[in-house]
Image (cartoon, rainbow, N blue to C red; front, side, top):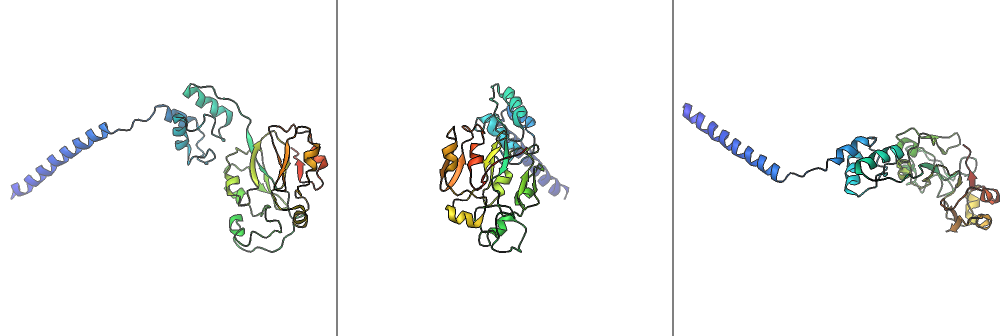
Length: 266
């Protein structure tokens, strides 16, 4: 009776030892060795896991940096300090780039952009845009329900009194969450030192723009004619600034007939 119990137990024990040894050998043979620099780079990253770098998290970003798939200064949250530390680990010199901040490229607040309907659904811009493009006459402007504010992890966005999001540039890390969330694509990441913007994204012709927003760009090209650096072009009825050429002289701001080009006051 005892033998009938002990023999299967012994057999199972021996089989367990054999399988365990086999797994240990297989694990050793097929082991994927991790570059020792990956955890070092990961330790320097801020750990926000915001996705602003284009990767799903800081772990994936660290691996991409070490593999050469992402630049050492690719973390928008960490900035120059983190880039320098990562560069030392990799043994390479990292060029210093001007930090960027989010900018809301729309001035169509409740005083300037009329509504064609009232929206009573969920307080979410992506939901509202499903309802025939949103409640405003302008199909390109800010909906104003604050989805970008909710997406911001760094308290860098708040809703202003007139229904447009306001950026706190000191808190902004340029992670890009707000830009990715906005269904109208009116939020862009621009150099922090730039204070002149085209606060409009409408590509409609001037007559339609005037009827839907009093401060929209009408594509008149007056700005292009006065810019001494040829930093402004008009494509699809919309002015666009080349920030690499712009010297922020303000000539375009003064010439714009609708006030679509603004100089930010900080």
